[in-house]
Amino acid sequence: MEKISVQQLNFFYGAKQALSDISLDIEDRKITALIGPSGCGKSTFLRCLNRMNDTIPGTRVTGQILLDGENIYAPDTDVIGLRSRVGMVFQRPNPFPQSIFDNVAFGPRVLHTHRENGLAPVVEASLQQVGLWDEVKDILRQDALRLSLGQQQRLCIARAIAVKPEVILMDEPCSALDPIATLEVEELMRILRANFCIVIVTHNMQQAARVSDRTGFFWLGKLVETDATETMFTRPSNKLTEDYITGRAG
Amino acid sequence: MPRKTFELELAQLETEMLTMAAQVENALTEAVDILERRDMDAARALIARDHDINAQRFAIEAQCLVVVATQQPMASDLRVVAAILFNVNELERIGDYAKGIAKINLLIGPGPLLKPLVDIPRMAELTRSMLHRAIDAFVRRDVALARVIPAEDDQVDALFEQVNHDLIQMIIADPSVTRQANLLTWAAHNLERAADRVTNLCERVIFTVTGELIELDTDEASPLE
Ligand SMILES: Nc1ncnc2c1ncn2[C@@H]1O[C@H](COP(=O)(O)OP(=O)(O)OP(=O)(O)O)[C@@H](O)[C@H]1O
Ligand SMILES: [Mg+2]
Image 1 (cartoon, rainbow over the protein chains, first blue to last red):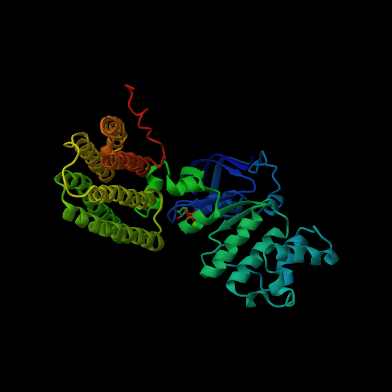
Image 2 (image 1 turned 90 degrees about the vertical axis):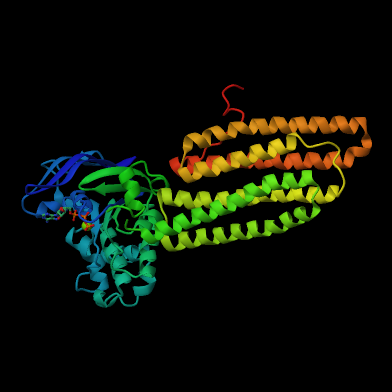
């Protein structure tokens, strides 16, 4: 069953069209990887999924994106509510300059989903889910920026899941991390897949191959091909995809 | 080409597989030739050369793993490497069948054969030709060619039946020939098995080009049967 259904999506930065006629179903409790050369529109597409592009002046969207069957671009959409359902993790870990605890508690506090004295269990559960709890349980009041980059990224994922989103968008979440921290985040993604719909943008083709269930290939603002990841990396149907993933184009 | 090094490595792998295939091809017809000539020394030399074929196979296999580990081939590149890995295994086994025929020659020992060989050399030539064209189909990524070769296996099978039949007749007529007749049947059987493996090579051509692993059933591949 698809969690998100993108239908004939077009996206413009002013006069420049960045996405053309994208249609894609994104399944729940699966990891969907988006690959493609720099500037092909992967990040733009990802930001469309929780309307993060709305904040950029002069942008325009046509088409529909259905989340559980409802168009998120409908005029009456509660955009704040949407972003708590569809969370985002960025390329560089971006913890707030606060304690580890406060970073994770940030969302529930802002959204008033929990009372102040009910936050500790949420923080613990979120840190447990990202496998960080044992490493930080004695230093919860410490500044988050003192963690290693890999730990910071897992903290950011904990912060994202603390508000119990349904979808997690990740834009090159490992590109600032060393190989071990990268593998840890990948392991974490596989664990989170049991409960979330995950969409990841990555330049690392091996990462897409390792971690995802389905892969979509973007090229010049178009979605060229989507398929089961296994198929995509062993026998893609499209020549462009083939050339890109074998390193002969892009 | 952004992947020049990799392209060269792939081409090198394929060239090495071709070299190996050429030796296996020669070994097949030579083994039968030696059997006809009753040449014991040449049989021993052929058996010794089988070690070279095995060594090549290990070298190519090792190189395939290096390419996978260092270049992370994907899609059609990955299929080429996988097919080469598979093919060298099949080639080695075909080489073993040729060696088996040389061993049979030694077991029969010097002295004339029961009868001049007719069908066994034909089987050898047919199998060699099928092998040659299967490798050619791989190099040219020629799916159409790969599809037609397996049908010829039926001719090899028919010749094997003929050999088998003739030798059984000889045994019935004169049981004292049983041992040699039996050994010759085994020689023919080796060729029949070798031709079967050519079908596997043909399947890998299709896999390399299309990504599909399909069984080229030798009977069904021939529409007239
Ligand atoms: N804020 C913006 N204003 C105008 N154009 C933009 C803006 N952001 C992106 N673009 C353009 O839109 C196109 C798609 O960019 P996008 O960042 O989505 O690509 P990407 O696939 O994520 O690339 P990368 O892999 O380098 O991150 C590019 O041509 C880019 O220059
Ligand atoms: Mg981007």
